[in-house]
Every structure is written in structure tokens, then in C-alpha cells.
Length: 164
Image 1 (cartoon, rainbow, N blue to C red):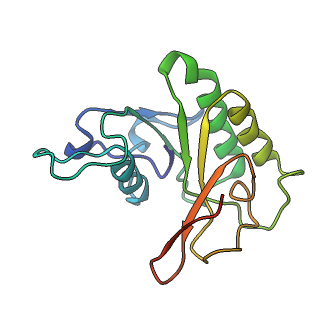
Image 2: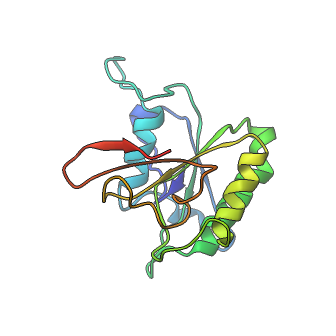
């Protein structure tokens, strides 16, 4: 889960491993924004009574927190993806989630971020990315513009779309 971090909550019952990026201090890894924890719950949460469950309720979440006071940097995203690439086999990581996008239009053929996404894909790791919330046909930012990623998103009316 490459996002705003994941706070260890009951619905993720001890299955969250917070992974520091180079230069991060251990105390900065909780999710102060809430988005990463929400996405982790959708992916792997399970309520104590079992009445609510995410897509993969038994999965371990490796949480990489990209939050910085001055915003998210593509270099941090790539650093997190390289961590996944280096640890995927030993930690049995088969899926990575990126609920983020760069702020400028780009082509997947020239984007450094998309290049790293494709390295993971070539190693058999499923990469799920966000297209944003502007609806169908608006996927022009990395990594959502990469045809080797599964791009998902919504629109401002609450409908969800699978672009690829």
C-alpha cells in the first residue's frame, strides 16, 4: 500500500507492517490523513464479527507512507516501488496499490514513474493505480496512464469505473 501510510486499526488485526522510506523516522509512519488506512481497509480489512470484509481480508499490508508537509514526490513513489520490487519475493507481495497520480499530463512511453511500474509488472506483480476522480477518458497522468497497470477510479458523482 503506497499511500499516506496505514494506521494499525482493529479491522486490520495485526497485519500492517509499516515500512520506512530512506530518511523517514519511525514515528512518522502512521496515517495522519486517513486515505491510506481507508484503502487498506477496502483491500484487506475484516471487522471483528466478520460481517464486513475487504477484497483480501487475510492479506498482510506493507504500508509505505509518502506523506510530506510539502506534498508527495514522484521520487518517493519510485523509491517505494523499488522497495516492493526488492522485497516482493521474500515477503510474498503479489499486488501493489497506488492511489495517487502525478500532477501533469505525460505519456507512459516517456514517464520514469511508469517505467518503474512496468518493472514490477514484468516481475509478475499486479499494479493497481488510481485514475483520479474525473470519470472515464481522463487518464493522462502517470501511473494511471500506463497500459500495464490496472487503472481504477470514480467520478464526482460517486460512480466507479475500470479504465483498463
